[in-house]
Amino acid sequence: MKNELLAIKEKAMAALAACRDGETLESLRVAYLGKKGELTSILKKMGGLSPEERPAMGQLANEVKVAIEGKISALKEEISKRQLYSRLEKEKIDITLDGKSRPIGKKHPLNTVLDEVENIFIGMGYKIASGPEVEYDYYNFEALNIPKDHPARDTQDTFYINDKVLLRTQTSPVQIRVMEKEKPPIRIIAPGRVYRSDEVDATHSPLFHQIEGLVVDKGITMSDLKGTLEVFIKRLYGEDSVVRFRPHHFPFTEPSAEVDVRCFACEGKGCRLCKNEGWIELLGCGMVHPKVLANCGIDPEVYSGFAFGLGLERMVMRRYNIDDLRLLYENDVRFLDQF
Image 1: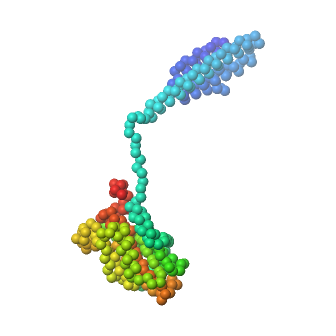
Image 2: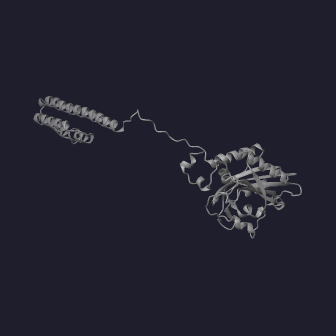
Image 3: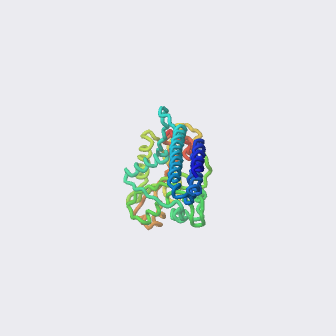
């Protein structure tokens, strides 16, 4: 048995000396010290020794075991250090290199201008109102004096979910909902996304943003509307802004007008952006039609009001001299970094 123990020790030490990785080291540990290992098999034969031989063989077996365990432990530490050094070498960082800067996000120009518009109107005593984008046909058209056979529906073709539900073409339904729930005086603006079946070009998109305003009280006149919009446009674009009002027709207002601002790209000379007209249509407005007031339970003999609708994208284009609406939706960082 002595020779067997010494042979196992010699064999184990030779195998361990050639070991270079943790997986092989674990295999060797199991092969020699495991439950079915070579040294364990020898130790099971101890019972067959005489009482005189047993102490000496027991001591030798223990020395062999301690020697093998010591070698395994030393190799395990050595391999662990070697792996750590290798990893550090591969993952080392050159602290002399410049750090990588991370860009900081900021507001989209649409949100920037929307916040300014809201602040201007809040400063004039208006409240912010909101409503659903998926709207009933009644609120989007009928309550606004646009029955099913009215030709105005052709110019506001939208996306229908069914005969009674659609994606709103304007934020005017918010005005109706407010007038149904609140009594005059009313002074609100209603910003939000709207949808129309428009061809995409430099000034049109099937999805865009609108800001509608509504004032209802006793003694409201067209001069109040005109003065309000002129103050708003000059605060947003500057005192040098040139504004004009053109007579127009809307089913939900009477009288009605279109409000234009002089083209910011050509200063009124005519260009692609203004379609060679020198003016850019900015919004529609007018005095709230008596039928609309009556539909909402407000007596048109006692109260009057005005309403207006602004296209947010067109205001942003005017503010930042952008000549193509599509730039606002393409998420091109080179474009957005300018704001």
